[in-house]
Amino acid sequence: MHTAQTKRETKIMAILQFISSTVWKSLFGKPADSLERSIDHADEYMIFDYNPITSNFVSVHQSSADAYVSGIIAGVLEGAGFSARVSAHTVGVEEGEGRTGFAGLPTRKDKAVFLVKFAEKVLERDASLGS
Picture 1 (cartoon, helix red, strand yellow):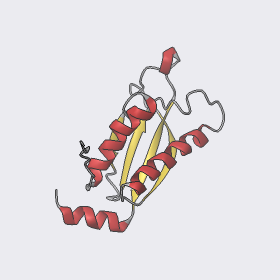
Picture 2 (tube, helix red, strand yellow; picture 1 turned 90 degrees about the vertical axis):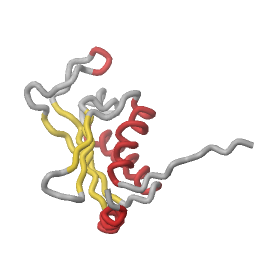
Picture 3 (cartoon, one colour; picture 1 turned 135 degrees about the vertical axis):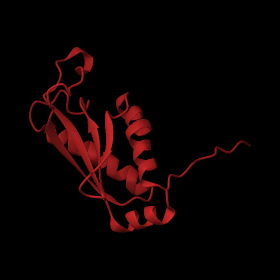
Picture 4 (spheres, one colour; picture 1 turned 180 degrees about the vertical axis):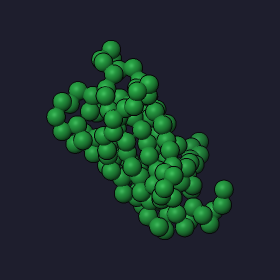
């Protein structure tokens, strides 16, 4: 019998890259547009999506649809052993920053930012594992 080998991520950036690429592509058909670490707060990371499919067709309460995605992110992180609070924010797209619209729709004037704030114990574990 063949047993599948699985890899368990142990580093913060590795799990976030997995979420913003593999998980995102599985759920939304494309990777997230960007993954960044906060300059001001070592425990915060941001996943950017210029055209989140979950809120593309929502005219009111777009943040509710984006909050749903933040729950998915939090669930994947918790399941992988990375306790974190995840919140969704809508931020205006700066001139020249926008992406093409989804399915031929006009480009959005805002983007979804999913803010991931890790628990202190996760940061301590990450630091102890080294780079």
